[in-house]
Length: 262
Ligand code: HPA
Image (cartoon, rainbow, N blue to C red; front, side, top):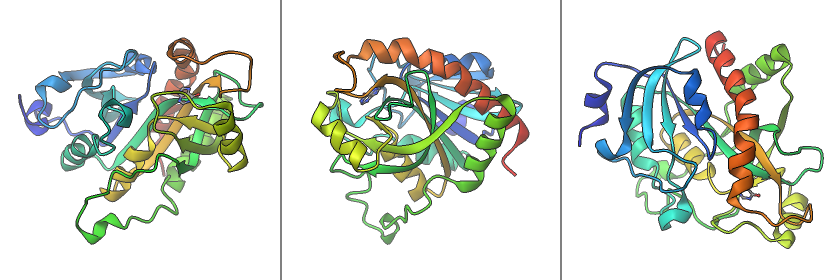
């Protein structure tokens, strides 16, 4: 076991990226300096979800120093929505000031099919919990009016236009999982303003804003949500479709990091 700072051995990432289910392919675009299994790092819990690995990769993406979290722990794994608090705090202490989150999600929008990429512009926390419950300081009262950084959103949109990548924009609704939603829940989600539904990301966004990090987040759509087609849902769609949208997402992230957020 070692501390993150010791493991990074002088490498100073500016941005952290969290890879969602089936999105590990992004690592192929990274010029890797270090690969550190979470099991070697103090404070990093290991996800056991298939399709997720469990290591931190330090290197350059588009010439920009990044720490890539290949695998995240989910609320549904052990009921702790603050499981990512320590890793994110340690990364902040190691110098990162920006967090880019990715996930696989179901679409509630008939015009946003599997393979689409959605930039998250806002979220609905439908889980009934919050990772800052129990935080004693007044810092827990985090404003989330502009949780998803405007300058970053603009920069990603600019790149998407330049690369001719269709980038949807929408609201992500966090369900606890691990079951998929019911058709009735999806009808409700759509009426309440959700464009995509999933089992992650929102707790990390909350924690990152608490820690003072700028945040951007993307969903790769792996399926139409429950009840929208005749099909039953399972984890296999996620594993099948995530790498497809993931390729374009990698292009979008790499080019934007290369060009910067100014
Ligand atoms: N619901 C919740 N999480 C998901 C879905 C979904 O339809 N697809 C991928 N992750």
